[in-house]
Each structure stands twice: as C-alpha cells, then as structure tokens.
Image (tube, rainbow, N blue to C red; front, side, top):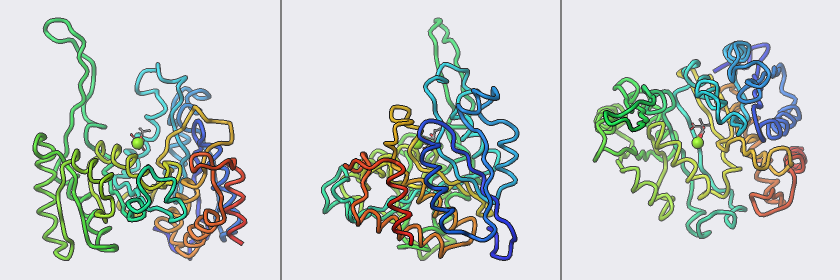
Length: 356
Ligand code: IPM
Ligand code: MG
C-alpha cells in the first residue's frame, strides 16, 4: 500500500488478448478523467499478444514492469490461435506466472448485484437482490501449481495427471484474509472444501478451524463445494464471505457472477501480503466477441476502482468510480450482456458522463 505523499504512482497496464485491450481502454479513460495527481501509466504486452511478438506470453520486460509498478491493471489472456502451443507458452501461463512471481495469493472477487440489474441475473429478482458477498480465492497453490504431466499406464493407455496439494502455511495465510475480510463486513465466513473426499481439503478445514481462534467474533461455517454450488443458486443471500482454494474458487466465482447479473460486471483484486495487487475483470478474453465493441467494460472499470481502494490508498476516488457506474446503470446504460445495445465505448462514455 502506498501513501498519498508518494510523488508518483505507477500503474502497469497489461491489456492482453481478445476483449482485454477494448475494456482496458475504457478503464484508462475513466482513470484519466479523475486527473489523479502523479498517476502514471506504462503499458506492456502479455498473453497471446506477447507470444506473437516476442515468443513468450510473459516476457521479462512485462514481468519487470509488473514488479516495478505500484499496481497492475490487467485485461485478459487467452487466444484460440495459441491453444495448440506447449502449455508453458500458452497465454494463460502469463496470468498464472504473474500471480506466482509476485506472490499474489489472495484473490478477492466481490459479487454484488446493482439493483438496476436484477432482471439481468439468471435468478429470480427477489433471490438475486439478496446477493452481497466476497469470494476469497487462494491463487498460488492447489492443483493449478502441482506437478502435472502426461504419462502412459502399464497397459499403454495415455494418462494425464495434476497433483492437488496445500500446505498449512498456505491455508493459514488465505484463511486469515478470509477472516479479516469478514471482520470488515458481516462477520460471517463460509469455508468451502471437499473434505468428505480429499485429504487436501481435510487439512484445509483443520487449519481454518485452528485460525478461527484468532477471530472469535467471526461466525465460521464449512460447506462442501458441490453443496455450495447449489446454495449459490438456491439462496445466495446467505453468504457474506466465502474462502476457498484455487480451483473451487475459479468455478464458484464464475457461477456467482451470473447470479449477480453478468460476468461482464465482476471485478477482482489479487493481492500480496503488502496490498500490492493485480486488478482484473473476472471474465476472460472472450475471443468470440473481440474487436466488435460488444464487451462490457464495467468489470474492468470497477477493477480500476478496487485498485485505487486497495493498492493506491485513494478510497474517495474509488467511491467516485463506483458511484458513477451505479449512476450510469440507473440511467439505463446497457451493453449486450446486460440485455442492451450499447457498445464498449458508449458504456465507457456513460460512466464518464456520470462522473462529472
Ligand atoms: C480466472 C481465469 C484463470 C484461472 C485462467 C485464465 C488461467 O479463469 O482468473 O478465473 O483459471 O484462474
Ligand atoms: Mg476463471
């Protein structure tokens, strides 16, 4: 976390692939309109775009910029042209590499429904309007980063494998983020695992229970991930903060986004232990609509607001963005994912108009 006194604040802009550049452009316009003293930007290639021009999805210059910056605003990675590459060269490795190299272990994914969007939710409005939660997803471990490979079985069949593991330190540090997040909100934490089947999850549950002793004011519950998927649709209003592992959090946060209106609306923060962070919309690169001006930039604009709040210590500026998004929606701004016809730049303009 930086302080107001710092002369310059450097934001790394990593637009990436697909709709990434389009949505980052709109977030940049909103940040520029705030005219924040000393805020500077440097842009770099990432993902498939970086692979195509440098041969690597996370070139050293990009990693260096990410390390130097006070915060990172990230678009999306993923490009069907790159799907046949060896895994370490695929665009997705760029975001996984940034998360790991910068120790961005805590992923905060708020799912809140703007009341104006109750009709855009996949759920009935009276169920959807209850949604107000944060999913705290672990980002540096789990099956994402375990040993993986392809091998042959004894009888010559192809077999793929990915090892799932968590050690207790990894669980404890994300559990603390979960409890801290709950302390700042409704003091309810639901830890999601699959402890009825997985040893990884049994350790997860044991360590979360131990960590609870540090936060006696928080009401802790545990839920199996399959039940959680069901409860998110049945009664999402029951959740305040969910803490879960990397894989379960990936899946549940996409699901929560549709309950909350559209995946085009949900921002996220990926933080290290000093509140340095990478901010990105939770949607991907959406190659099917890339370059057509159909993408909803609001998730990225809201990610920029999270960046101002969590890493740049500018909460009043963050509030201004959040309020402008709400005002634009109230005035009827709707991209196709929200049932409207406005283009990516028209959505950005609606937010700019609501800022002033
Ligand atoms: C996400 C994305 C990534 C993930 C992909 C692009 C590697 O789905 O941020 O949720 O699985 O973490
Ligand atoms: Mg995902």
